[in-house]
Length: 300
Length: 206
Image (tube, rainbow over all chains, first blue to last red; front, top):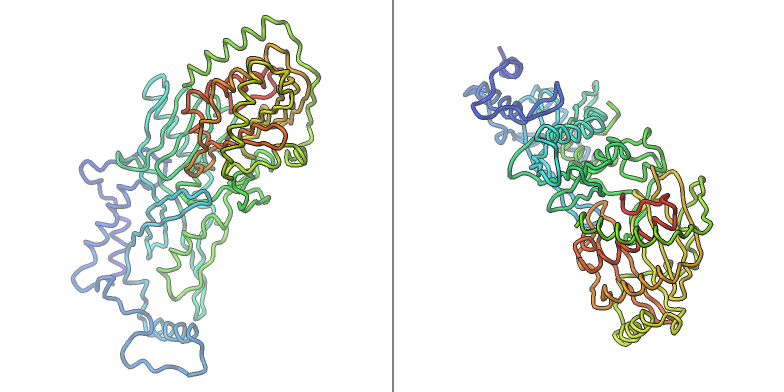
């Protein structure tokens, strides 16, 4: 069996979670961070001694003895042509990479900074944007269950607006059918994660900032549906800017295309959604892992 | 802080409620005209809270505010403007002169489905309470927030003016809430707004 075949088989094996690494609450069917880590471990174990490590892979077009096709080509065309030669010779770069993690960082127009981890399963073509969150209990909660239910409700709100809404289309630059990278999100619980205070029984207006977020239960669940919480998490999960007017931020870019980061109260809560521009940085990071492809975001 | 604000509101509510005063005529627009269209030419339109304050102007206005609190008739044109919010959650603007003339506009209504505006004359008692609260807050000793707003954090802009003299203050919402002196003043302003709007305006999500 080929190395890639072994990897695929091992990826689909159903191994138990590592001790102490149980799944955090998540939407049914959603991978938890522990599951992803377990998958990565399993996959790397299964690579075998003959599998070259990812960092040993020669960049496309860097093989010794490669002759430049023609001096008339632009630099980009040269790179693409070299990659196509590699691909036709069976040297697929994607086939030897397994799973990559990198930290994404963004700064919004208010100067707030956010970071997340992008975990990319290059073979399976799945991308997971992950944020470890420390949910801080504040205010008055009837009991732990009420607090946990609120946290789960906030997570579900985010997943509902973010998961699998877009995918990254990979169009081979040397022709052939496109492939797609699915995109989903994970908010996992971790004590030293991004702190989000959840104020029970308290009315207030949510705020997100570099140092942490503040959410209020109060009556907001009645007045402000899931869209409001998805909006807030759009800051810390995507680093998305607000797109509504604020007199103290004169240079802000305003939109009116039913963006969830804009004034959805006026434009319509039901139509509010994340837009392609909000996933741009994630897509750019994914694109770096697929050098032989032209990448673009398309609706899932 | 919330409990403190509730207590302050209860006191103000008791005062206003006992007076049996009726709210002046108000208007509620169901068509959602942007607030910016309303404040053209109004004092708040010129707000630039980041501009440095002239010490002489600040000292002059401080003296006027002090005297207006004791004798409003001495400086009837002394004006206090308060604005809090942004387009997502709604903006409330309230402006009052030492003579008691006020203007209120807000789209912080239930579900942000209505826009409210009203103008009229405060009762002398409410006007005096407000002027005293402005004095007690020592706004002229307060510095504008030096940090940047958080994402979705509401800005609070206060402008005091008399003639050509203007003193501006811009606070990030959480800074305003954390400042007890300002919080007391804001609680009074917000309760007045609630009373004047007959409960239609719910400032800061209250």
